[in-house]
Length: 531
Image (cartoon, rainbow, N blue to C red; front, side):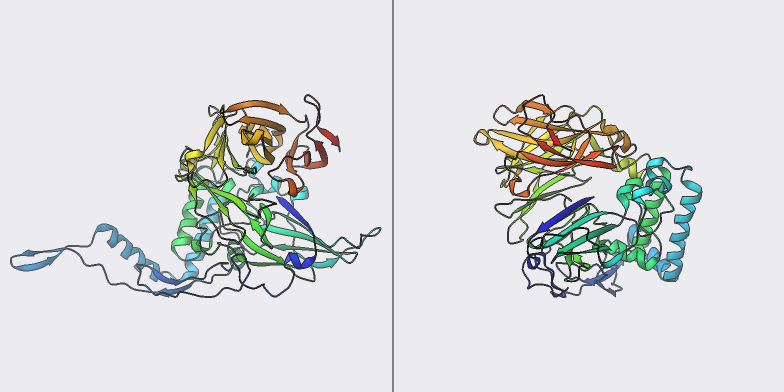
């Protein structure tokens, strides 16, 4: 859940209904280029390039390839063909059976299996953290879209205020019948456009490929990642694989929800979810919110990217990363001011698949957390537990690498016991780059990250690291309050900043207020100066 605001002339916000001229970041209508037809075991496809459309723009052409030639050897003066391998026989059998079953029956079968799992396999009652009746209550209850609507203004808006406030967050398209975590909802943007002393509100779903496929089906057909656990979770994954193999879902277009955050990069609004590509969005002159398409940076973004990229306010460059369950578990990259994505830098010293939600940058470095929250793909795929958990014996680390490094040889890892941060507030260099100061919210106790978020306390800390000595040389708590989702003046991102604004959690993730902090207050004092 994240929001961004703009205070600028609307031409900067890409408000025209006509997409701008093509640049590496420009939003254009999909164009089929470089068409190549090949004979493949299952299908041949024509692919569009950046941005990829949210609708299925891949043209599938049925192809029945000839079986590959097999080795032969002379027997009694005659050539004898070797029998095809067992795997090829099995694949041929599956294809033959696939053709015998009408597509409507395949869909009905998968839907019936999903219902069977929900009604007879999944344990009841569900744990509160994944029970839709508990999760989707109060302020988290699903809401529908609202077209552009003029707001009633009490008082008077300054005539110079010309811009928009946009918030992103999860909002399920359908009421889930199965286990559901708050983070599993479809992305929805809520926008307030202010211009000429008037305000216009609009809320729209982000039309991801996943959203459109479930809209067509009329029900949820994707498994909820954060709720996958146990035998029921394993069976749902199996049904999902069947949907993919039978052509109901095309993984080429991703599985993302675009529900986590927003970034404003090169005059383009991006909706983000860390296991998929960004989705480009735009505001229209009348205040409507439109989905342009899935953005792959000219085909150079092969997998997902963080939902919290950092945009340098001076250079305009974007610093980002992706992580996953397969080595290398962490890959760092940057995007130039012209929108060109640079090659990934694999971080092999990141030794196990851990949860990396955010990074921080300074003028010289990029900073990554290595937390006790680890990914457990084996437990998820075998039905033995949730996809993430806590490793109590692991000592948290902070990784620091030069911003323009070409490989990981200059990466330094510093142990910071008990320091698990999901979101950073800011970071900066001191003493000519010899020391790095990081401000972030430390989660305590970390073992409740998914199941009991109401028990979490976020302690805002300032950590000072000496790179020459390779150790922490200073660490202090900045407030006793439960604070998260800090923001600063973006002009000071990566530079020394004095003030920050944060949400008061009472409890996590309910927001009960906002505080202003002054980092220059004396050590030992609470840095909150206004509530």
